[in-house]
Image (cartoon, rainbow, N blue to C red; front, side):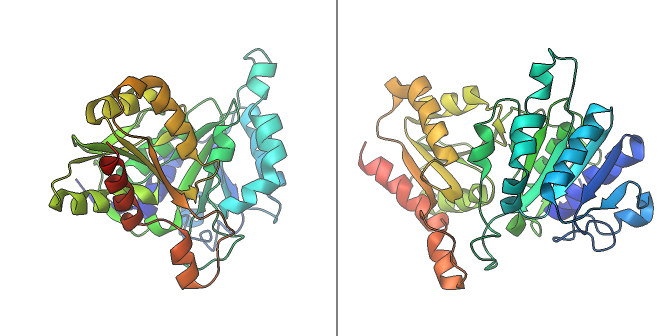
Length: 326
């Protein structure tokens, strides 16, 4: 199988989809000649032209609103919001329009809109360019929410998102763009709503998203040196959630840690804890541990940023805590 970076996998999914379907086009700030803020769409305007790789004004609510209109008219738009933080500016369109049209029309109107965005710490962007807000959108009925952590997953999940008849918020993490991984020769669509077990174990389940999947795998390696067998599961799709796979894992290991880069308070880990409590309460041998960022705006200084967000050491500490309380 070929090896691609996460960035190349995103570009490959977009390019192959656009080659095969004239309904697909992209809109976003600086995505044409500049290739986007993270270089994901570099070179695509040369192949597809400025009609299908469209630079937009700096107005996220207009970008998303135009995408909704195009989707309703039968197109398959993929819009890019340069920084995840700026989704906040498009919330009215996403929450009150995109998420509602299909239900309010009795299923007559579909909104096959894909909203790609990236965020996360790791390069000192400061408090307004590095938030992780995925739990906001999981709370909204009518939106699907995806957060891929590997090149293989990001390619297959993005393909499925483009062809889903519902609006999809597709999160990417900026520090994952350079990572490499093997991908199939042909794109294999990954169904939305299916988790992935990255590592099988018997003592504790770590349910992680985005960058924390990789941090959790590193923590699992360290835990193994202490004789602890860790199972690492990535939901991949946050809504709809593959509760069955997560519950089955915790029923097997009897312990659970949730891990994400977003702040702990109100984070997606709280929803995961509720799902596990409901589906595996009688199997739990210890309270569920939650790992996430400090409850504070992200600091600009690298040392403070590093302190605020979780790493493998934080996941490992949570693993030891849940085992000590069993």
